[in-house]
Amino acid sequence: MLPSPFYRVTSRAIILDNEQRLIVVQDNKGKWQLPGGGWEHNETFLTCLQREVKEELGVLVTEVADSHFYYMNLDQRGYYSLRIAAHVRLASYEFIPGDDMVACKAVNRQQFLDLEFTAGEGPVHNYVDQIWPPAERG
Image (cartoon, rainbow, N blue to C red; front, side, top):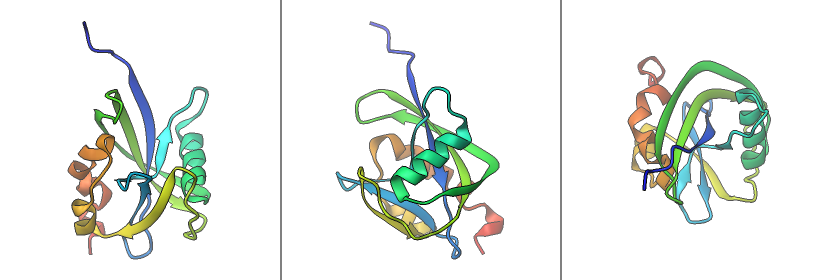
C-alpha cells in the first residue's frame, strides 16, 4: 500500500516578547508546541494565524512578518503535517490559554532547545536560527 500524499497544513506563530523570549503553549499531555493550528479552506494565512492565536492565547495578532519557514513531520496520528511558521506581533501579552492548552510560557533560546515538543513539532528545533536570527540574540 502506498503512503498517503495527504498533508495537514498548519500555521505556527513565532511570538517573541520584549525580552526576546519565545511564547510556547502546552497541550493536555504536557508537550509543548508553537501557537497555531490547522489552515482551514477559504482562509488566508493571515486569517488562519489570527484565528489560531486568538483561540489558543486569547489575544489579537496585529502584524505578520514576511519571513516564514516551514517544517514537516509525522503527527501523533501518523499523518504528515506541513507547518508554516511566521513571526507575528500581538496587541497584548496578557494570555488566556484556550480549551486545548493548559499553559503558556516565554522561553529563551536554550530553554526552547530543552523543551519536549509534541510529535509533529519535533523538527522545529532545527529552525532555532530562524526564530532567533543572529542579530536578535544580543
